[in-house]
Image (cartoon, rainbow, N blue to C red; front, side):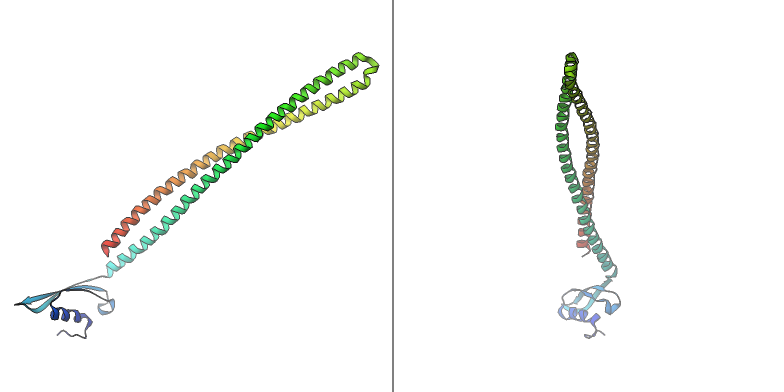
Length: 223
């Protein structure tokens, strides 16, 4: 006997009373698992004489929905993390370009320094020649040129010191140029790696977007 007070039978009685098919979901508390039921009235001479009931458990379906929902959330977080990595890689590439600009500025200043060093070397060379000529003239002057010869020798020493300093500066600048070139090579390699990383993470992000869309379709289908 069907009773209105029984939640599992109430829907059947309602279908028999109205003659209207019904699809309903019964909570887990009634049968121990959530149930989806389809109730179809049976007519005889226009009168409802019974109900065909078809019911199936929603437990696995709910678990699938929960798993897919969690998967969707993890994909969303992964997509965000990949995008962050892409942004960081692009930012690193931009920073490397800025450093390269500074390196080129240093290179320009070094070129100017080389020009100045060559000028100093030229002056030192001419000063040394003048000092040598002055020494020769002082020697020709004999005793009268001794004082002038001392000045000429000191002038020659000063010119030589300038030439030595210019040579040391020139060597240091060459070492700096070598270091800058190595830095540029390292920056080019780092920039290439950053660009490759950005491209690869973008590919991963595209794949995650595709998977996420696929999961969303499954959610709609299961729902």
